[in-house]
Image (cartoon, rainbow over all chains, first blue to last red; front, side, top):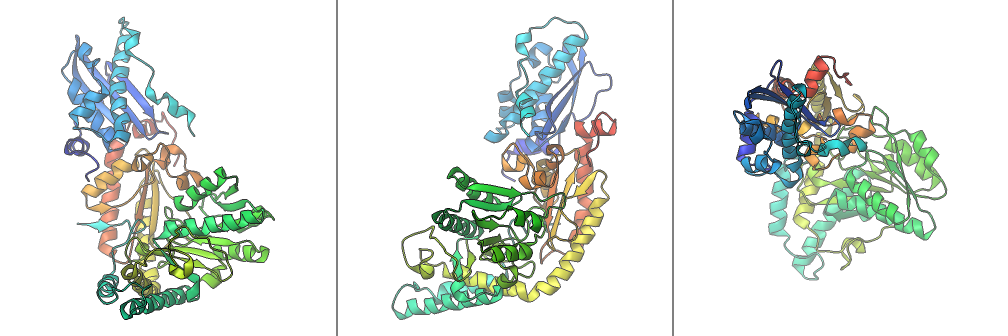
Length: 144
Length: 395
């Protein structure tokens, strides 16, 4: 199918880092089933480094590919760097997404931030709340 | 292996129709509006096609208008009835919640122009009630429009009964028979309809051509002005090769209908039985009153677009009512109308079998689909929550 780039299809068909981390240090889940996509990110953190990351996604091809790409981009990176990951960077790394699928890359960015926030809160680590804005999916609750 | 299971989207062009297309393009190149021999020969061929299409539907030649397809036919029927209704002060239209967008969007447009639009519910089985329709018809009603068979879930509607009610109440009745023609018996007299829309590419004809049946005495307004073609009811030089190909495709479909119905219904039932074994799934639409080739399921915990993409990788062409396949936020209005909540409506799959579908195809679909569903469920956080009891199964 030519709806997606080869890179999106590669990550969709052969997703990297699918699965669960038992006793993960941080877990983030964003989206909702009503909207048709949910992403869940599990982090293993050693010191300040994301030593392992896994994801589970309920969603379309680009949601799965965005999750896969996002995990690759943050694996082995310090938390401070993972926090700077933007949805645009995820989409660019996938050689682009169709305009109406850009929200999938937004979900990936938000899922990672949610997992890091969870890690900070579980461990009582102070963090800049400005970095964690409300999920863009909140509006979905309104439509039925 | 390659399995084309999207015949409700479009069918493969029949060889007989292709042959008719090419032959007509070569032999009848004249413009039917021209006075010379070449033009008159083309006009005669056009008239023969009109007679054959009319005969296939149980109408007369003058009652057939060739159009660009189902959407145009639906638009013209509805806008005509609305226009003539409004002139008599009637501005109410009764239809159903599961109509094709060619009908629903036209009705939305009329709503903005002040018409009252009533969309009847269809219940879990996906079938509208004739009694509900009867209750809604009043002196202000200028049109009732009910599809003969649904495009997503294949359910067959009580058009004959609703048509009889409309006839008795003298209310114009339109049926969108786009999915039905060539797949079940369709006779305009038996259906008691005043308008009927059909599209050639749903029964092995070419795309871009269709017809509108308009019962004698029923008013029709032009959508396209600019010439006296189609008895002054649709301007534009007739697409004669496509019309001839549609005519042949229609006759071929009808000649094979009894055998097609028997064979394809059996394949459909087998596929439904096989896919029903997948845990936490549900068939969409009534099991009995459905088109021979339609199989539509919702699978809990997964999303339809990823399912389609993976099936495509396995050589399977299918369709889904998921929001992600349409580019909109909401899943199919048809699935919502039969009571599927958003969460499961996103995980829908439509397989529409056709004349070329084989026993081997059904075996292949039955083998691959459960595997792909399981693969996607295994990476779905929703499925995990369901398994772990953190979420309640809907299906």
